[in-house]
Image (cartoon, rainbow, N blue to C red):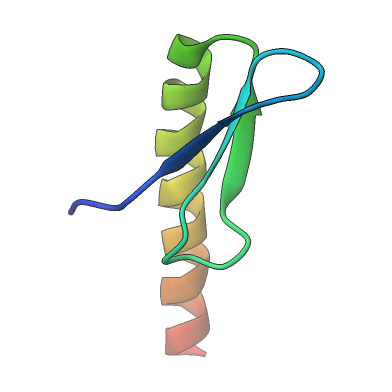
Length: 56
């Protein structure tokens, strides 16, 4: 599955990113590499929650 991710520089340093197609799905990282790792984890978690809500 491919998801569009928008990466922003954080004011305090590092980066933050959001997945526009999943409301509330965002994360941050001190480095770009950390951010990419975090966005995979948070997107998986957000999709899991959405899937569970559909079952309920």
